[in-house]
Each structure stands twice: as C-alpha cells, then as structure tokens.
Image (tube, rainbow, N blue to C red; front, top):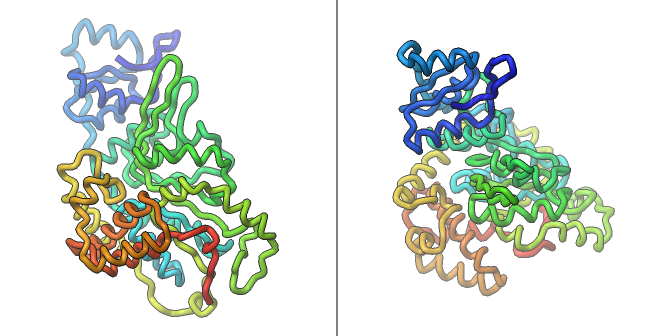
Length: 410
C-alpha cells in the first residue's frame, strides 16, 4: 500500500510509484494499492494487479471484501518512434564535418565537445542531435521513466517517456544539482539524462569543481551518493555533449575577427577544463564560421530522417554484438577485453595508430577511445574490421593539445 493520507481520510499521490511498482514485482508481490492519480503510472508494469482508491474508507472496505473491486486495466506500452526536434539537420547550412561528427557520436554514444566562435551554430546543432538518435526501446523507456517518477517529473498524461531525454542545465548549477543528493537523495541532471543527452553549453563557465564530479559517472555509468543514514545508487549512463568558445571573447584565431584576449587570459580560460576530463571526451571538433556562399547555397542538405536511419542500423549492429555482454549496449561502453574481442585492426590500421601514439604521446585512455570511435565509423560502413580510413578519421577527432583549438580555415 502506497500513498499520502490526509487528515480527512483522502488519499493523495506520491512520487516514485513506477520505481516502487517495479521493485514490488521483483520482490514477488502480486499487486499494489494506490491513490487514483498514481494508478496509470503503476499500470506501466505488467503482471501486477493495480487497485486505486480515493479515500481510506474504500481501502478498508476492500480489505474486508477484496472481490468487490477489480484491478484496473494495464496500460499498453506504446513507444512513439517519432522524434520531435525543433531543428532538422537539413535546416543547418554547411558544417558538413560537424554533422558527420554528430552522426558518429550518435551511432556509438560517444562523448563530444565542440569548440568554435559565437554564432557558429554549436547550440543549434547540439539540440538537433535529438532528431537522429534512435528511439528508446521498451526497457530503456521504463528505466528512464522510473528516474523521472522518483523526481516527480513524469508528464501527467503520458506516463512513459518516449523520446531520449535532452538535459541542458545552466552553468550556475551546483554539484548536487548535477550529480544528485540532498538529505533525502534525489537524482541529479546526469541521472535525468540517463539513456539520453547531457548538454553543457559554455563549458568553461561552469564551476570547475562542479564539472570535475562528472569523471567517475562518465566511466562507470552510475553515481553513488552516500549519506549518514543511507547510500543510494542512481543510473547515469548518458552521452555528454559540451560546447565552448576558444577564448573569453570567442574570436581566438578567427579568420575574420580580431581577438582582444591576452595570451595569459586565453591560457587561464583553457585551463578551466582539466586534462583528465578532456581525456574522457571521445571526440573533439572545431566548429568553423559558416561562409556566406554556404548560407545562400541552394544545395539540398541531408534530412535528419536519412541520418537517423544510418545511426539506427549502426545501433542494431551493436545490439547484436553486445547481446551477451552485461552492461554494454554501445561501442562507447566497451571495456579493454571487449576492445580486443570486437575491434580487430588491419595491419595498415595498426601501423597508423602506432605512429600516432608515438608521435603525439597519446594516453592509454585516448588509445581506447580512438579505437571505440573507429569501431562506430566501421559500423556505419557495415564493416566487420576496422580499416585504415576508419582509424584515420577517428584520429582527426582528438585534440592533440589545447593550443591547437581555434585553428580555423577559410
């Protein structure tokens, strides 16, 4: 029995009913008793008898005569495969290299950072990525909806989330708001972005101590919150997208505009992003200003639907690949042993990767992430092995050092 009881005997709804109903089923309970407003949410869980009431007296009568009331009908789990987005990729002029990067990142659920001047379209393209992501499957929809249920953020009408969450918090948020917590721990933004996107715009404007807490959840896909009376673990398997300017004024090494920042100011600005955090971001891409000729071109751009179909095919390949691997669903989540098992390299690919590692002194995590990204590129090409062109392209998405950011080309 779950619900809030008023002094006059009326029952009021509570948060977290979906999570409680799923746990009740796992614990072997046959049914639950709830306030009327919570019934539709609990009915998302199958094989459970859901009884709903408005007053405590009705509950008492039910206990005396259980056959007098029938359980409500279970809601069918209909997953809406139509992803609604404000911006379609066909509306974005130029930026072909960025679109390609977002397609690869979506295919393998890779973390990505975009560096470019104001007005280059970083935020618009980040928001439009929702239109090319594969829809939530039934299990993912239940997982994500459960988190929103605990937070009291489920839609009053559509109790089941149908599209992947896109969280876009302001840079003034606290560490607790980001990872979760409080005296009675609640999920934070990283858990609300579970199975979806966490977009951090203007990354250097975030407090460094706040964004540094992302390092452990990005690796493990969970966040553990310990308090004196309890310890809570929330899921946090999200795809991180970040955007930033190359300097405080935004025009460092811009081909047309002059930067007014001193070298010391630029260095201080860049150092707001730590090396360990940057190393955990799989793909680094520079967003260059769009030329007038590209804005006025009549060329027909690829629609989100076409790109989404390629991403969906790549995800289906990964779903088959990891069907017997617990905790791994996409290429970005592979561990070291899985890299050896699922990422065979040709001799040419091995040679170019070795040369890049030795020449640019890349770290071991960077080595793993380059192979993961190349595996996603190969999946988009329906290739079983990672070819030299896949490795070569993956290497382009690693910033060799921060001083190379902002090297725009006309």
